[in-house]
Image (spheres, rainbow, N blue to C red):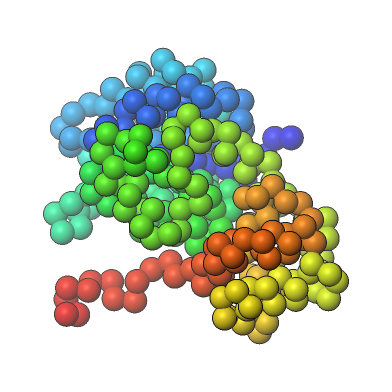
Length: 289
């Protein structure tokens, strides 16, 4: 069942730097060409060098691979690659280019795109961090998870340069740490979930007092973490529970409560989703210090 046009199709943001070319190739070789998803590749490029990435990736996939242009609506089963010396964003399903900004002398194009992706796609946004030096993408990844999307990072043990994925993993907000060839299957399965499709879970509505309902789930979280969410906004709680259910391929809320009981780690992951802090209070910590 295809997603509705531009405004609703999922977008997978892919970030990488040094050593990312081979993982990119492996990922696209294993990604079905008919997933109905748009892919946006953000690679650190030398400002004056023309990118060879579109041609290199086109050899690994039957999807159309093009360099992104300003004002391009994303289409399903297409791959868009950032041009040199530009930042790339997305708004209402349309890609836009912006003058490349530097933070403390360092370009952060992955953070720039992931933040725009989070705001524009919400639960239909997926971000992946591949091999690279530095920490670009960590803050943007946090934003994607805060908006309800899926966050993946390359297993640093399979990366030529593990700093970039390792920085994201250190936040404990990465949903899955995987080798590149295993990521496509995870993404396809995630995008099948009712949470992403906009359909209601079978027993989500009216799931208050019944066994395995919201009250029982919140009681388990309270027992295992000490945090009481009974006064939180019900809609927010429900979406966060649905997100965790989707990641575990659980379609009935009554089946999620036993999972929480068995696995205290899952209770803490749900807690993180409910408490996620998308941004830091002190934007410029050095200045405040």
